[in-house]
Image 1 (cartoon, rainbow, N blue to C red):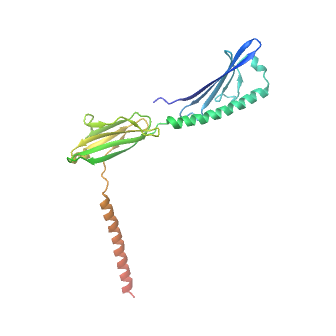
Image 2: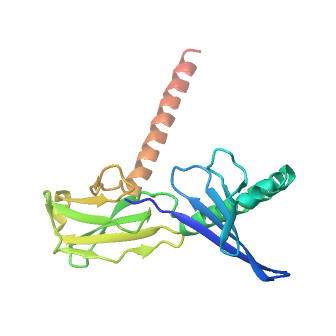
Length: 237
């Protein structure tokens, strides 16, 4: 997948009058963010009329504002230090803007989906399994139901991929079957954020009543054991 590139571009036009007429002073700033690049790259280029006269590139070896016209070589050291310092301050503002932009669009990385299978029973006794994926980015995803390893595209109900409200997406695919065939079905989830496809199968959750029964059984076991120990100690007195 091609990496997402974030750009912030700003052109500043200043008109200054001179004895021979009007001249233009223009600065074009560019900030670029790439996954794995580290700090965003910041560049600025200055033009007088249509002639480039200065430039700055945060990825250059010098890390300084540099002359791009022969007549700029006559500027003193204070000029270059002052403009380099001001340009680096601008770069900090752009870095903050890019972080805000990446957070808003959530395009700085590939977020893998979290997935689960939900089971419900129809009024006529049939079973519907729904394979649900959420919290993924980008939006392209594949949910496939398989019966004994064979794809069930015609029998699957899909919804369109929907925004999750936080920059991520969600989607589900459902399939209907007889109650005795649930174990034959698996859901395959494929997404660019996953190192390999996920394969999910419905795992029945223990009923809450059996959980309560188990807790009561453990409690009674501890209570009976305590009573036996207490009676034994009293009989030895």
